[in-house]
Length: 612
Image 1 (cartoon, rainbow, N blue to C red):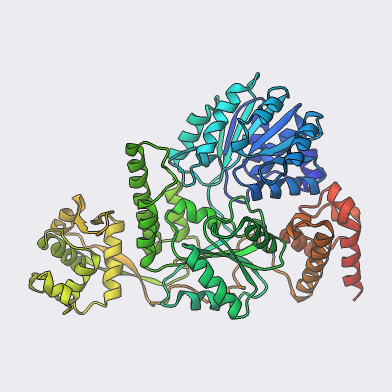
Image 2: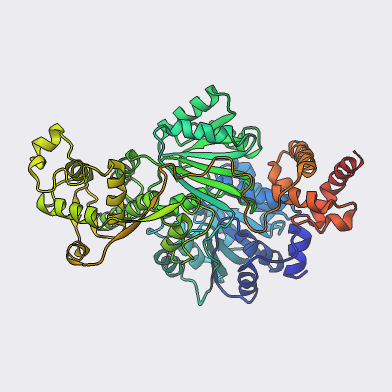
């Protein structure tokens, strides 16, 4: 079979997505490849399809057990023999899997990087034809990436030990240009075919909220999105426990995940979420990499992550099936302090020398600053993210909280000059709060103690609401008219642009919301992305019946429901309404193997609905 026949027969798709065909062809031509493709764009097919066409075995290096189990489960459900080798296997299971691999039963084997240089695995690899090494989550190999894993550095040593160098393919969803170059250099990719399909996920709605009661805002969101599956990310284990406990007390079916739980409880809670036994999971960043649950309809952040790479990766776990989904970040000022503590006390980089550790910390502080600006910008949120990764859009997406908020251009020239003057006259010694309180004319003990009530700019902006002064201060930082140090005291400093603004005759404008509430109504069922499908009431009823059948089959097969068929496939069934095998095979995501396993039952379910 060629790649097109494999795509249809095993995976149920008629055409390749952007970038897939080029990467597959590159591998089949014997070239190294590097694919930078957004979550949900089908990266795994880029190495799975060539693996089925080449002689020998494809090794997929994967960082997490959950990711391996998920992808191997998907392959087995599609009729493709695959296995994984990691610490979740007993010794007997591990060596049995190696024996089967030697016999040629598995064209694809997933392996943890820590296993590569063990004696037992090397004995297998050195005496087996390895046709390709595919590095998933390739950003983990770069110390400049957001999720550096020293164990990934063993990949290069392992490849060099093999008698014949295999094709090397690498894939990631989030990587700046610096990280991309680093991956190519460290993996020693030879004249690779490099494809960047873009970072945009048009089906995702992005929003930022700064509510006084974060838990109340999340509870309200969940009340208006019943029966939907979603993830609530928290900055700390304590937050996870508190939010999960309150949700359960308020009647929501929720579970939790963080590194402080036992392995058994983490595994059970993760499976409860994946298998749709519990629709909501509260988690730290320890949860999620490689979780291929396609019907996650929302990702809420109870707190701001420490960088945009981490945020976009976590938010990207929503809507992997391409259906409209929502990513909302609930921000509070304390988040910055919490993340600064994480950065200063990071134990992950202890293997580095002191100079490199300090460079990484400085990089992390800069990333935190850009993440914070995301929470304050009045520009298009999607455009802000894309610019961070080196792409440029139209600055209006129509599918983020800023684009759906009415703004007006406001002249902030006088306020900006007053802020710069206050910073300069106080000899750049104080933080944002002191500067704003001074300009607002606050009569506090701290202001009197610092003598700022004698500052020439004291009370000059008393008529401007404090929240607007903060907006202006944030804008001046974003546009680099002012800067804030990354140290413990976060002091406001002048920049090269400060004097230019003071001396310039041109006015300075910024966009301000006409109303303080910046996020649209929680229930946005009427909004849908281009190409998405709206079902009428009758089709919604059919969709629910198909979901019930899918759950029934999933329990029988002991697999997550989305591995049987995704929500997108069920939605397409409701539109096509197939009456026979030929028509069922036109549904996206239905291949020959899955039709033989499940097709008759789904056809029967649909025919029964038609008779009603």
